[in-house]
Structures are given as structure tokens and as C-alpha cells.
Amino acid sequence: MCIRDRYEQGRVKHLRGLASLEDQMCQMTIGGYEGRGSPDRVDALVWAIHDLMIEPAKHWRNPRMRHL
Picture 1: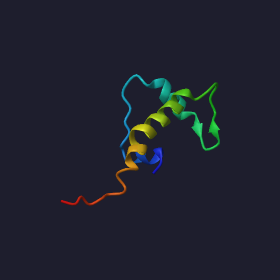
Picture 2: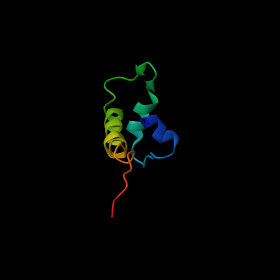
Picture 3: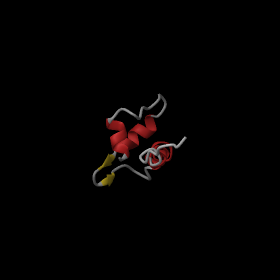
Picture 4: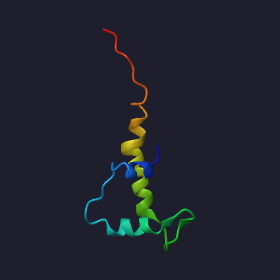
């Protein structure tokens, strides 16, 4: 599951005060970043979502039965 899926499922929400991030997100295309400079805020967002949501979920996919 990729980060785009998290947005489509409504699992990622933005708080106020992230206008610069949203501006960079709007300049992302299939061909890459069309803005000036580096998309540093988008890059940080992708890594944060990966570290906080995607990486921990890897452990949830393999349920195990506990023996009593």
C-alpha cells in the first residue's frame, strides 16, 4: 500500500499552517516536481508517513496465534 492510498482512504489529514507543503504537493506531477528548488517538504512528508504508518503496518500483516 502506497502513500497515495492512505490519502484516498482518508487516513492522512493536514492541519492548518501547512500551506507551503500543500503548494509543493500541487506542483508534483507524474513527471516529477515542476516547482522551483527542491520539494523538501513533500519529501519529509513521504518519509514521515512511511515511518509512522507503512513500516509499522508490516508487522500487522502476519498475525500469529498465541498458545496458552
